[in-house]
Length: 125
Image (cartoon, rainbow, N blue to C red; front, side, top):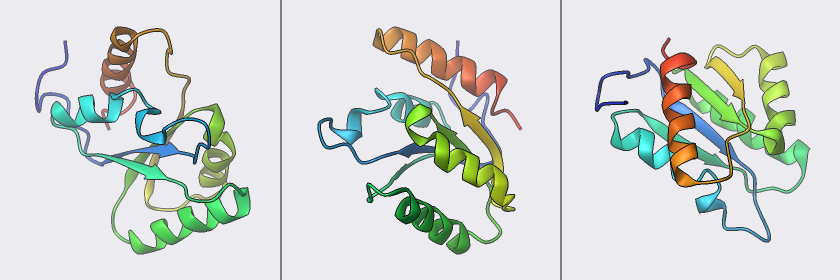
């Protein structure tokens, strides 16, 4: 079980979220960022404003350019796969890790178990 301030990452975790016309983007990750934050992780949710890929990449590049000296773990799913691939090709010093993952969509409990597993196994550096 994940306990407060026990498995902290050295760098913030950024969840990438695309604009959604039919769904509320604030509930997109089903509370996982909030759960990790409650347990001591430094978590951000990067919400893209544009529908167009080129504009989203510009948004991401602007963020990275403003983040000189910082590093982040980037998390996305199939809806942000192109952005994650771009980050990988960019090889920017702010990018510590890139994780493409499909979070379980069945229940909050499955989501929380997935978040714990992610934090313990993939983001411990």
